[in-house]
Length: 290
Image (cartoon, rainbow, N blue to C red; front, side, top):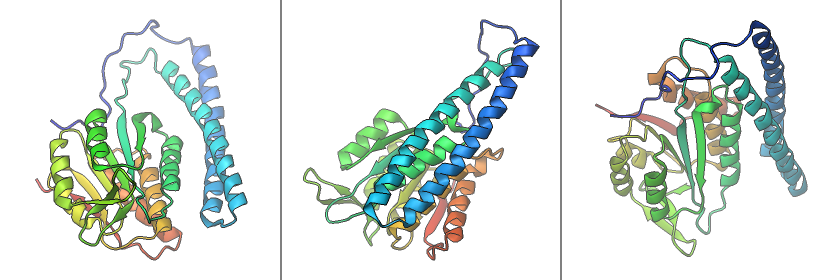
């Protein structure tokens, strides 16, 4: 049976039956303060990230990246404190929620001679998840310079719910991984479909952010509920903006659990349109036919 997207609700024994009204009031005030700080910091980071996308001067790019790293650390502190407050406020309710985190596995490959900004794409994904109000639902794992055996082992080890590949694709739909020397090693759509067939019990969504990856997405969709691929070559910046929008959408509150991945896909498409990126028809969304 497939792992549900909705966090499992369980009864949890606590040491406290309830909070005093005064303590609850203080916590609610502190939560409002930290939510304001969190929102302002998120907006500041978004401005810096947008500036980095269009910056070409190496020294300024380095400074922006440093500012982003510092800002993400600050954002994490605010988020951690908000989590602590929410946990304490939950005491004394009818039932507490044990959060079952959804694992996101990011796989990146840049074989020679390709030169893609996959580091930026991964940073944008992390940033989107850190900004999310329901960020406690997600854990992010990364594997870079991946070979075929690295992908097999990572999926088997982590049992992720979401698998994201960023890199290069070939016209026949194959994804280009690396060999032991860092050179190209294509993996066919059929090979990828066979891999995900083994892990269909827990993988819920596969995003192939690579050129010509629609054929692989279609093959994988025989076994996985939701897949996303690209039907043409996609520019580096377009791929990054789409990923940023997709994970922003994934992090929003959404009561329609059946449509959460389509909602995230639509958010990625909107992000591309708002940046005036003229590649808005390239990402394609596929749902498993039952």
